[in-house]
Structures are given as C-alpha cells and as structure tokens.
Image (cartoon, rainbow, N blue to C red):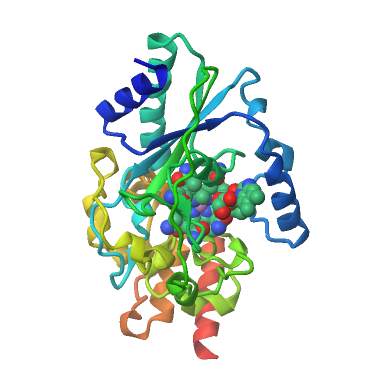
Length: 327
Ligand code: B12
C-alpha cells in the first residue's frame, strides 16, 4: 500500500473524506497575484502583509515535499437566517481547536506510522489555504471566493499539513460557476464582483473590525458575527451532505439567541459561552457592540431599557447609534 493510501485511509477512519495533496514548492504564480492586490489596496488587515511568507511554504519546513489539504465540514442545519443570528461557521466549538486536534492526529500518524516529518496549519497563518485546497483538488474556487467541495459545498473549514514525504499530487477538480451570479447579486455590500473582490467591505469583516462607518449599521440585519449570504444563495450548497464531525455541532445556546444577554454581556457569560466559539477571538466588546447595532437599527426590537456596559468603546457605539437613529 502506498504512503498516500495509508494517509487517506487513516483520515477516512477519523471521518475525514475530503483530502488532497499538492507539491510543497514556492507558488511563483501567486507573487504577481498578491502584488497586484497590494497595489490596489485590497489587502485585509487579517491577511499576512509579507508576500514571501505567503507564497513560500518551504519557510515553515525547509525539507517539505508535499502539502496535504483537508476540508472539515461544519454544516448541521441549513437554517441560516433568524431574526438575530451568528454565522453558521461560528456556532460550534472554535474550529481552530477542533481542526487542530484532527490535524495533530494525522501528523502523529505520518511521523510515528510512516516515519515522516509533519507540521499543521489552520486559518491563522500566512499560507493561502484556499489556493492550496484548489491545487490539491479539494474543491474549486467559486465567484464568492469560497472553496466549493463536491460533497460538502462551501461549508467547510480548511487545514493543511506540510510533510517531508514525497506524495503524488492530485488533479485539480473541474467545476465552475458558469453564468451564475447569485452570490454577486446577493452580497449586501457588493464586496464580490467578477472584476475584483474587496474583503475590506465584506460584511463578515465589518462584523469583526474595530471601527465601523455609519453607512454599514443598517446592513447588519440580524447578523451578530460573520456573514453567510454568498454561501446561502449558492446553488452548489443546495444538495450537500451534513457534517459528520460531531465536535463541530452548534451549541444549544446558538440555536435560540438571547439578545438581552448579548446586549448586556459580562465577562462570565462571555467566557462560559461565546469565547468557546470562533466568534470570541475579537473579544466581548465586539459581540456586545454587534448586538446593540442590531437592536438599535431594528425598530421592531428596539428595547434597550436595561442596557449597561463597562466598556467606553461600546458606550461610544451606543451614543453613535442613538444619534444615527435620529438622523
Ligand atoms: C483574511 C480572511 C478573511 C477576511 C477576508 C476574506 C477574503 N475574501 O479574502 C474576512 C474577515 C472578510 C473573511 C471572511 C470569511 N472567511 Co475567512 N479567512 C481569511 C484568511 C485568514 C486569509 C484569506 C486571504 O488571504 N484572503 C485574500 C484572498 C485573495 O485570498 P483567498 O480568497 O483566501 O484565496 C485566493 C488567493 O489565495 C488566490 N491566489 C493565490 N495565488 C494565486 C495565483 C493565481 C494565478 C490566482 C489567479 C489566484 C491566486 O486564490 C485563492 C482563491 O481565489 C483565511 C485563512 C488563510 N490563511 O488562508 C480565512 C478563510 C479563507 N476564511 C474562511 C471562512 C470560512 C470565511 C467566511 C465564510 C466566514 C463567515 N461566514 O463570515 C467568510 C467568507 C467571505 C468570503 N466570501 O470570502 C475559510 C474558507 C473556507 C472555504 N471553504 O473556502 C478560511 C480558509 C479559514 C479556514 N481555515 O477555514 N476571511
């Protein structure tokens, strides 16, 4: 049995079916791509600024020969929109932790079972994870920028393993959006278009960034963290499998949002609930701010009688919103 088959079998036993491999080499073709985005000011503050760190996986393992890409499905329930809601990717246990646990098991197998050397990555790193998934045949890139996987659509997280084993690369998968423009038309801030994608106005980013311009307040429309609109309307997400990874199942408190709790959130509640999810990485104040943006821009649920905060940052938003409402 080849080492490739052994790794795939091991992943399958863990419940991971969507895996692929590509060569670990400098992505020369990505240099021009990232340079152009930099010139056009399209880089996002959460992206790595140093292009060399983004295009050279060898920086992380000099003797690396192969990169493995794995897609982790997280969809358990297709009900995206409620009056107030967290984006689907942030309703369960923080995926950085869950994905890391899986990847670390695969790395152990490669090291102890196959005598190789292996390191893993998920999200907070300079590597272009979608590009690696594309090159590894895990999915194709949709007009909404998402990696679209045949079995799970775009509702997957991506993780990678660099190893010093020489594994046969996979073919790119064929698939494309064709003439469909549903995501482009549905994007609430027109962040995605055929010509250019501007992550700096992506509503997911707006819900996570520190300073929000007034023009975006009324765009929240119930979103408490993240945005799923471009995935929700995507035809490739219509007939897909639900996740088999129980560790990513949404917490019960995410199913029925308690807006008063969020608008008045304290450290105890934050730590016991939201900090366990990936929505916690920007801190308690961002969640409280998003809750009050939703409350004060939605005339139906405007009830801020008991509002309290110990944050001058959130207080400032409260006053900006009251002023915005009077305009
Ligand atoms: C910064 C970031 C964001 C920013 C900017 C997003 C963006 N559009 O780039 C914000 C906060 C807005 C964000 C939002 C989201 N994110 Co995010 N994000 C990242 C992060 C950390 C870096 C992404 C990045 O570099 N963006 C710059 C753009 C240009 O790169 P990209 O679209 O990711 O990949 C393209 C380039 O690499 C390009 N490329 C590279 N070389 C070359 C060479 C050539 C010749 C060409 C043509 C292209 C090319 O090809 C890729 C596909 O187009 C990655 C993790 C990582 N390390 O990659 C997660 C990541 C992309 N996010 C992820 C997720 C889940 C989301 C959200 C769905 C969360 C949500 N529900 O709110 C949204 C989706 C928004 C969207 N439609 O893109 C997943 C994507 C999973 C998937 N199946 O695609 C990732 C991979 C995290 C993970 N490990 O799972 N994110």
